[in-house]
Each structure stands twice: as structure tokens, then as C-alpha cells.
Image 1 (cartoon, rainbow, N blue to C red):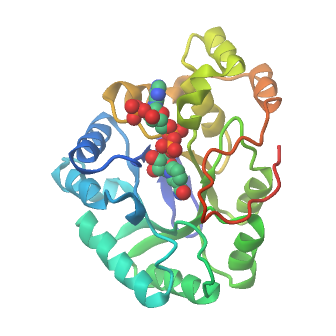
Image 2: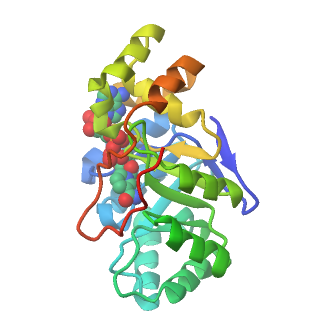
Length: 277
Ligand SMILES: NC(=O)c1ccc[n+]([C@@H]2O[C@H](COP(=O)([O-])OP(=O)(O)OC[C@H]3O[C@@H](n4cnc5c(N)ncnc54)[C@H](OP(=O)(O)O)[C@@H]3O)[C@@H](O)[C@H]2O)c1
């Protein structure tokens, strides 16, 4: 498995398993299956109500915990330092682990003290319980403030990114700062299977549209992707996307697709950056 590494000791497989919206037994089963077939990167969050289910899969697995990269996140209404510390304690308890590989702020807060929240996040890295820290859904000005003004040692930014949503400004930023960008909704919740251009490229190579969409991401430096897949069939198919070989013509066709198709924008989302290529 290809890993993303950086100066903050990040060591994150480029392909991970997304777990939202699975909970309970379904989630435990999917994570256990994923570990069995070779996944070593699992994405969860307090907001998904499935950290306990992920934790059960981790402890039941024959794969040693230290070989698995686990990401979790704190919800946006728990960003006051006390609340964040309590949420992080719950995360570790639910995951049945004394550390998490990557801990992130899930969304920017509302009327929040950004400096205090970031200071608290950094303290989890300093005490070793979060091997790495990051943020999700931060627009560029806020990310810039946290990294350049506060000097927070962030390793990862997690945002929606796929063939029909451009993120070039954020990608430039993370590459400049030795960070990774984890793409969520990387197969556009399987809408790529209906996109004529992606289908055409897939047919040319004798592969699936989902595999084209994933390989397009995995080919990019500093980029990881976390497709959610419940079934063994889809998990294996997504893993096999590493074998797809896209050419310049394919990439030009994908580059010409609209790049402003955002899927995830809940009421508490920040003001997003302007659409980019
Ligand atoms: N940070 C954030 O705010 C945020 C927001 C959204 C998502 N996320 C994370 O990103 C993960 C993935 O994003 P997502 O769930 O929005 O979208 P996604 O991964 O693009 O799509 C998931 C959907 O695609 C289906 N699928 C997976 N592999 C397939 C295949 N090979 N062929 C056909 N269908 C396939 C899944 O069905 P089956 O399960 O039936 O296979 C599921 O319905 C989430 O699970 C979560 O961990 C983070």
C-alpha cells in the first residue's frame, strides 16, 4: 500500500475506508472485512456515532493496532477546550486505544475561539495521544491562519474532492506545507458510475468508473482518498483501482469536467472558497 509521509511523522495509506453512515454491527463488519482484505487506513469521527463499532473491529482483528492508521474527528459544537478534551477522551475510549493516528477538527466552529481550539488540538499531539493532527472542511483563509499565523503542525486537510469538484488552491497550499489532502466523497457517492466521460474512460481500459475516479485521485501527489464501501466486492474493487493506468488523454477529459459540483454542504458549513479547476 502506498503511504503519505511527512516531517511530522505522518504515515498514512493513500487509500482508506470511509465509515459514515455505517453504525453498529454493520460498521464493525465492514471495518473487519476491510482489514481482512488489506485496508490499513480507517476514517471515523465522533459525529458518525460509530467509533465504538470501529473500536470493536480493531480489537477483534488479527492485524496489530500499530499497523492500522485510524483517523477520528471532534464535532464542531465541541471546540471549547474543556469540551474538546472530553470528546477526545471519549474517542480513545470508544476506539479502545490509547492513541489515534490522526485527530481532526471536523468542521470550523460557530462563534468560536479558533486560537484556543487549535492550541487544544496541538496539545493532543504534544501529549502523544494524537500521533498527527489535522482539520477538515477548512476554507483556505482559515487554514492559512492556522498553519502560517499560529504555526500549528497540521499534517492533513480533509475536504470533499473528486472529478467534479476542483481543489487546486487547497492542493497548492498543502503541498507547500508538507501536508496531505484526504479526499472525501471521492467517487461522488457512486454518481461517477453515471458520468458519460468517466464511463467512456473506464470502458477504454476495461475497468469500472469508480476505479477511474479513484485512480485519478491516487495518482496525485499528497492526495489520499477514503471511499466508503460496505461490501467486500466494493472494497476489493476500490483497492484494485491502484492497478488502473490512466493516460494524458484521460486526464485531459477529466480536467474538462465541471469542477463546482459540491455534494456536502450542511447548514453549518463555512463559506466555501470560490470554485476552482
Ligand atoms: N470530513 C467530512 O466532513 C466528511 C464528509 C463526508 C464524508 N466523509 C468521509 O468520507 C467517506 C466517503 O465519502 P462518502 O461516503 O460521502 O462518499 P463516497 O465514498 O464517494 O461514496 C460512497 C457510496 O459509494 C458506494 N460505493 C463504494 N464503492 C463502490 C463501488 N466500487 N462501486 C459502486 N458503488 C460503490 C457505497 O456503497 P456501498 O457501501 O454499498 O459499497 C456508498 O453508497 C465517508 O464514509 C466519511 O468517512 C467525511
